[in-house]
Image (cartoon, rainbow, N blue to C red; front, side):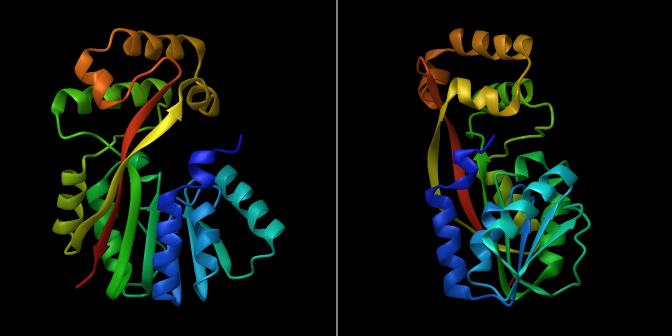
Length: 233
């Protein structure tokens, strides 16, 4: 199933605009999935490497690439903690709606810092947790019931710390609420009925604070999201 969240969005447009201004020789899209970001980068870079750990995602990405006749996108199976690129070779790295699956975000941050050239940058767009610990714990429990491969929605402050400790200069470009249709959100992940019922119960029993933070409604809700830039000095 095609995900509208992944296929389009203001953050994807912003990433493409940043790439257009930078015109990188080599761009790297980490956790490329169906290659929506990598294909957007390909219009502005000499060469794009789209990296993903899962073979089915790479097959889907290759289909998208070939259908569009894009010739400067190379798809590679690889781990975000061991990027198959030499140090100081990448001018623009991106990660969009995939970082919440990374088991060790600190290791990812160090690897990105390693492969970036001086002045190169990472654009990281993902769902994030609110700074309130109770809200953080609640939404991450929800996410795990929907998708066991989910590791964690980190807060903006946590991402600043991970990237900063890797030696990068970090800024938040924009934060927003990502509104989702509840049933479509479950359907896209093919969440089993018992797990989906558990999430429904959590939503129905949510406190006023949770309802406000995640804009819980009868058929929709909203996740917190952010686009972060990290530059190698």
